Image (cartoon, rainbow, N blue to C red; front, top):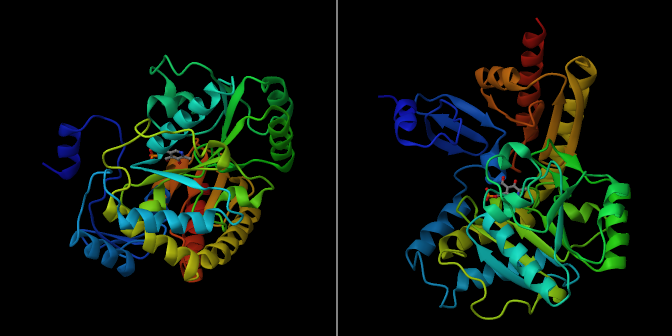
Length: 397
Ligand code: PLP
């Protein structure tokens, strides 16, 4: 039986997988067992910020496994503390995020932040959580309760009480929904799953105004956009706003499972011993990998590359839009988080790009989402653009 047949035999049908057998990864490339190289713009869905086989991260993992792979969270653990210090350094230029909790994944970090908000709300008579249509916050039932995409929610009802949705960038709707019972607004300042949509300045201003008036918590989901992907440590830094709670994951563990949420002074003392926890969260090997990943991104020029290559890639894509106006409707996003909205479903384009040895992801049916490693070079951008050009030409034939 082929790998594909075996997968179909043993696994629940949750993932529509590519029929590629990957042998290894190198930089921005994935190499199949038969030696074919693919330029990977999925980037492990925003996990592989340093690409594949980064020697610094690999070495950190090797060093840590020689010491201990797991200790329970009853122990003080140097890698956890070092990671916390580093996250604090880059996330809190003004010292705002004074506490952290480490989880295993994005959705668990989101669950934890909802629990933190709820407990905070108990003493502040606030209970209602507002999130946005088009958002994605995870697959567990709490995170799904605030995820604004029917395709992920259908059949999993009932959801958490006190959750509701507002249209993204709709100031008047938000005005009408927020009141003194509002506990939290949960937002991706750049929505990934819905096709790379950014909160506009009016909307951010409205959130700020309502927050000042009603005092709810602002929770930023930076799971996909965080740690340099958009050219800043967090995407919200592009806007004039600082949340109370920030949720992180994806690249945080350098490819190993790790999530986190951070909180400011307002929520710093809400949890008391034993009121939240996890067995595996903050795994020391994942933390060791995460430390080197963050240092590499923030201290070794990788974030600057994400900015420069991101601008270059976006400019080239905009030129393609001018060349293929009947096919490309919009190009948007920042840094290494870009979307190409097509006039058509993207499945065929995705498959054609696969033939051309470039892996691209499709979201929201007609948006090609690019989440390349932050190390993507100008030469690699040139290659991507050449292949898109060929692909679009072939598509229109
Ligand atoms: N939030 C956002 C913005 C995401 O992109 C994701 C994952 O794609 C999640 C939450 C959930 O993270 P995880 O898959 O690690 O549970």
